[in-house]
Amino acid sequence: MKKLRKIIATSLCAGILSISAVSAAGYVGYKLPRFQGNNYTSAHAKTTKANYITNTLENVEGTSTVTFWANNSSKRQISNDYDQKKGNTSDIKFTTDGYAAEGTEIILGMENASWSVDTAFCAGTVNFR
Image (cartoon, rainbow, N blue to C red; front, side):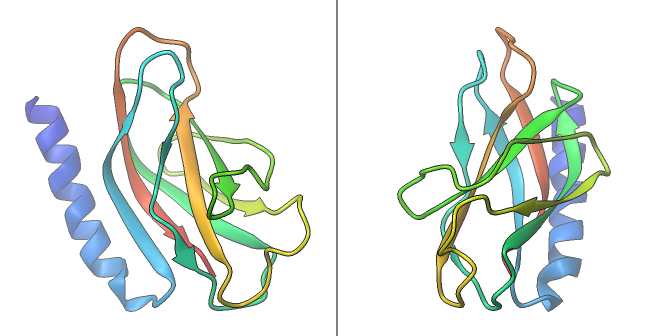
């Protein structure tokens, strides 16, 4: 539990430092449900016409790898899966047309990459561009 508190505190500090980027959003202490259950950020409107979002996994506990993907506002997957380890940054490219427009609502999906009976947690920053 001490380790989790340290991860959350560190992530909060990192999140505060990244607020200067208008389209970047931090996620802290996101639960990765057991048996590869899914979790999602809230929806964010794109501010550019880029056909991808950029995700940085800053902290993780209970697993070594987290799988991320992009979703539309209905939580329908619009990208391939991207496995990331702590400290890794990935450009998550849209594989479905029509989501690169400014104002389009995008959600980041995530799950523990490992099939596990335990719950894991992660924190990071995603630039919804």
